[in-house]
Length: 120
Image (cartoon, rainbow, N blue to C red; front, side):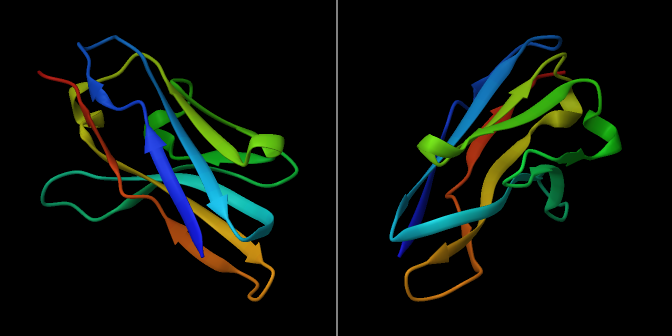
């Protein structure tokens, strides 16, 4: 069993910043890639940014230069620093992790989602 718990969402004015956190817990042997996805109303869920266990990152073109993904392997936690937020960043943000447990390898775990709202 793996649980991902997100925090840090909220309402922020355009140009503002937020930092999302996602902590993994449970029967974790190791965590491979971790990432953040988002889903706006009426749209498909999309990848925002991802990071490997070694620290390599990739991000969507729409957030390059504004969002930064990082992780603390000792805490099984991934972060998303969001700067210069725009109304089009409004969405529910989901944490994702590819986890090896003691019983199963490659468990794809999802968090419950955290709302980020940037009013226009």
